[in-house]
Structures are given as structure tokens and as C-alpha cells.
Image (tube, rainbow, N blue to C red; front, side, top):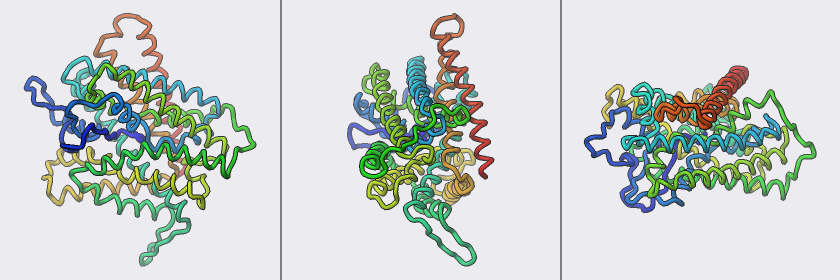
Length: 442
């Protein structure tokens, strides 16, 4: 969520009747009752375009890759530097685990025809309380990913234009903070839009950005930097919690799996398509991680683009491609949050109060982005706390509750309980470590 983020853009089979304000599935059946919270939490899954005949398996595969691929790829070499080469084995296990919990979500979706979204699964399993808890975690994740986008913009623009400074009366803005504020000014008008269809299609460039970044590292390895002579650490237990959090960020996308599943023409193909998309994402992430660590070793930064030489054309291509995605996706991320706040206080859609609310939310993310100096720490926190909840704990707990699998001992029950224990350990250790790092760097 992206962070890859918890926002996804479905690639439609045709261009007609595209709207981000319409629900993906018809709610006209009188026997399906959906309350206001359910309607709003559907926005968390992308405010998606409509499908007349459903998405094909190939389109669904692209949608899943777009859901999973995000800014997490930038931190993959740093994750390996933190955990050591052997942590890549854990990375593969994380990918396998997240694939299995994705299958659990598919099974939960089949439990009842009224389930269309992730919060709907929580409601079916645990009532309104379950729905509210899942929705709250999704809102928090969206907000933090929006902050990470601004940090990414500030860091990379400062690399492209070092030493930039603006003086306004007695106030001097320079470096990362200047570019965070500049990015916010560019983003601000997009947050006022009600129809985000254009931004939705632009944000799909995230698929291209991941490939371009990997290609740039290959270019850097062949043409300039070469491979570091140092072998790097085999295993670093102290940095392993941070690496685990960053690995989970790479595979977070479960919040939108229900919507992607519902959009499919042939839903029986979901597990196969999910497997293919997981393999492709794993290969891209793994190649980026290995190349970045081989080239830059322990000197690799939390965003590998910051290590690329500033004067090279491939660096500019990689950074500009990477930066377009957050600029387009920011408004998509905070739209569900602003809609929920406006609904809560009964704001009229066209009132100036709505613009004030959206502006204040943007300003709050600017302040926090300027205060958190290290992109890797924030991404590790998102992965350890929020992504583990969405990708591991919630699917397992909801599946056990819906199907009553906990009532009889079986191999599947043992496996799920093991996954839950691992998820809790990762969440506790990773969250503690990342919070300690964030507080220590302030």
C-alpha cells in the first residue's frame, strides 16, 4: 500500500462509463443491507471504475500487481542491508505467507453474497465492531502512506536539485522541506477534485515505475557503479525487525483484494492469478534488492534512488518516473479519509468547509513529513504494524470465525495459528523497533 499501498486502480476492459464516485458492484438488491460506513469504506479500495462484463484474468493480474507494487520497492535494498543476505529467505517466506492469507480472503468472500469489501468481511465475522476496526486500520494506513509519499518527493527532488533555497521575508526554506512544501502545492488542487478518474489512470504508472527502477539499477551496475567488493552481512539480527517490516510493505494489498476479486469475470481463477502476480512481484522486488545491495552494499540508503549518481540520465528517468506516481496517488489516498470526516460532520459537498478540511489534512501530512527525517523508519512502521494487521492477522482471524475452523484440530488450523503467532511477533518487535528509531531520529 503502495506503501503500496492500500490504494489500487483497476484497469478496465473498456473506457466507457468510468467514474470514481460509483460503487464497483450494484447494491440494488433489497435483501442486501449496507450501512453508511460500509459505503465509505468501499472508497478505501480505490473508488473504482465499473466493469460491464467483469475483468479478464490477465486484467486482474495487472490489477493485483498494481495493488501490490508501490514505493516499497525503493526500500528493498535497504531492507537487505538491515537484515543481511539470509533475510532474503525470510522475504520469500513473507511472500508465500501473504499469498496464503490472500487465499483466505477469497474464501471469506465466498461465505456470503453481501460481502463486497474488506470491512464487509469484518462485519460478517464480528459485526459492526469488526467492520469499524478494519476500516480504522485502513484509514490510518492510508494517512501514513500519504505522509511517506511527501517524504519520498522531498528526498528525491532534493537529490535532483541540491542546494535549492527560497527566502520569503525572514523565513528560509531549503532542501527536503522546501520540496515537500512544493509537492504539497502541486498536490493541493487535486485534493479538491470530486472526480478522480484522470488521476486514477495516471497512478497506474506505478507498474511502470517499478520496472524502470530495476532497469536503472541494471544500467548502473553495467555502465558505472559495478559491484561492491565487500560481501555484505550474511545476517544482522539487530536490523531484522526493520527488514521484516519493509518486506511486509512490499506485499501489502490485501485491503483491495476483495474489490479485485469481485470485479473478476471468472472468480474461480483468482487463486491462480494471485499466485502469478505474487511470483512476478517477488521477482521484481528480489532483483531490485539484490542489485541495489550488490552495487551499494551497506551504504545503500532507505530509498535506493538516493544512491544513484545525480548526473546520469538513468537516474533522472528513474526518479522522475518514481515521483509521478505519488503526485497522482496522494489525492486517491486521502479521498476516503476526507469523505468520512465530511460525512461525520455533515458537510455539504460543495461548501467551502469541504475545501478547508481537505487543505488541513494535506497540511497535517506536510508537517509530519517534515518532522520524520527517515523514509525507511516510517515504511518499517507501516509494514510492521498496519500491513501485518491487514495481510496476516485480520484474514486469519476472520476466516477462523466465519468458518468455525477453530472448533476442530486440523493441519490447516495449526498452520493458521502458527501464522498468527508469527504475525503477532513481527508486529510487536517491528513496531517497537521502528517507533524507537523514529523517536530517536526526531
